[in-house]
Image (cartoon, rainbow, N blue to C red; front, side, top):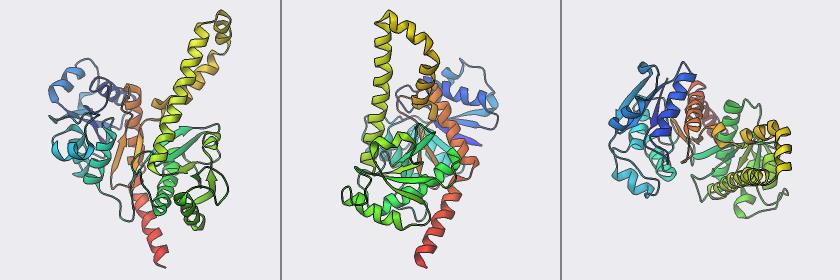
Amino acid sequence: MKIALDAMGGDNAPLEIIKGAIFAINETDDINLILVGQKEKIEKELEKYTYDKKRIEIKDAREIIAMNEDPIISVRAKKDASMNVALELVKLGEADASVSAGNTGALITASQLKLKRIKGVLRPAIATVFPTKKGHVIIMDVGANSDCRPEFLDHFAILGSKYAEIALGTTNPKVGLLNIGSEEGKGNELTRESFSILSKQNHINFIGNVEPHEILNGLVDVVVTDGYTGNIVLKTTEGTAKFIIDFLKTEINNSFIAKIGALFLKGVFNKMKKKMDSSEYGGAMFLGLNHISVKAHGSSDAKSIKNAIKVASVFVKENFVEKVKIEMNELENREIN
């Protein structure tokens, strides 16, 4: 398969992006990459590495969409931006998926413009994977749709369930609605109406409301919410994880006794760090489109890029888009009947 990689997108482009591409090539045998961006810069970076040159090609794209640019204006004005060109390759069938660590808003805009929504999907959504006590949980939307209708969250539940089945191998994944209380009548108008719709559906395993403090307990496999709330949850969780790790480092370094204790707990700390490391989980999937578009974190390092490429490859292999299309078609038929 071929994956188009936006080599110029992200805070650490193109150095970490290309390094991650090399990691992916050297650790797999079925992924070929198209590095999209300014050819001379990509070639200069590639000279540093040993790799199978038959598995990487370069697609020249002269423009770059900066992280602070207006998403809609930049996508429409910069036709030759690396992000736009990578998605165009997917649209034309020259690549099977796209991966970018670039401007999130621009990627959302460009992905929807070029790849289009799957028939029946009201709004595509960004899904990300969180670690829990029991394994992992998928949260969506985490930024694509700030304002939502209950029907959107219903479709998020369908998309998230399919994601859990494919990415996590979860059978009949449990779906929860993010809310301020577990009781049915809790929340605002959106959550109350969403609860009513989700509880009547038989195409998902909806178990009810989930409070924020329960997300990481492993109570459910999929959590659905609007993009505004989901993005706050994502950034708060990432910030909390970083605070805990930084706090432990500081306290251990300030105390000789703590350093001794840390030696005995080194294995535990390493496990915790790995579980909380967002780079372990690759990119966030943009679900509900006719092709695969993966958003890596803006500050992604090579490891994160490598894993984002692998995430994209899994969804290509598993024919995720076709499975969603079948699900949405069946849902439409059930509603008609």
